[in-house]
Picture (cartoon, rainbow, N blue to C red):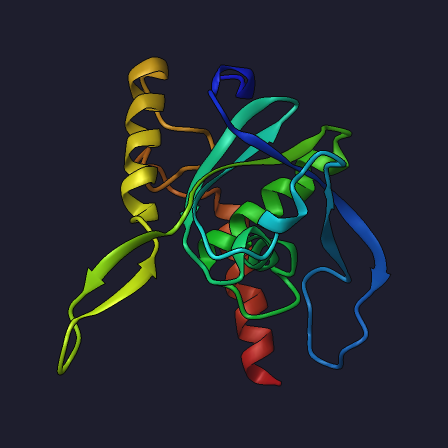
Length: 188
């Protein structure tokens, strides 16, 4: 499915392989981190805002991954886990998607990020001693379920990089690279 078919999404920007070398002393899998170049029309106030959001990775306009976040550091915080993966201690899924992004960039393909978000809502929240009125996020997980169900309904499968939802194993080369990377970092 092409991103043009998604209604009311916001283009965040394009991911590239950065040009700065890693300066730390720990073992890294990638010497250069990925970098997100924000689209000139991206609303800067959304960059670090606490929102419930769906993020979408595309390759040449085709949706490859749908995910969700409601991190307090907004889309910038959410993307940082993918951008720095291989220079930190990521989980397998973030490591895998980061590697897949790099592979597409190295082939000369354009990898972009889009998002759909919902503002915080005012709600009465139960507390330990008393209830309080707070600004809280809508469940980003619930939003993701809707996106994935609609994608699956249209395409008869989930996006290519949503391995878990497709009930598929990650490519063995990625799982092996992750294992070696984590072992080497643990031995330091």
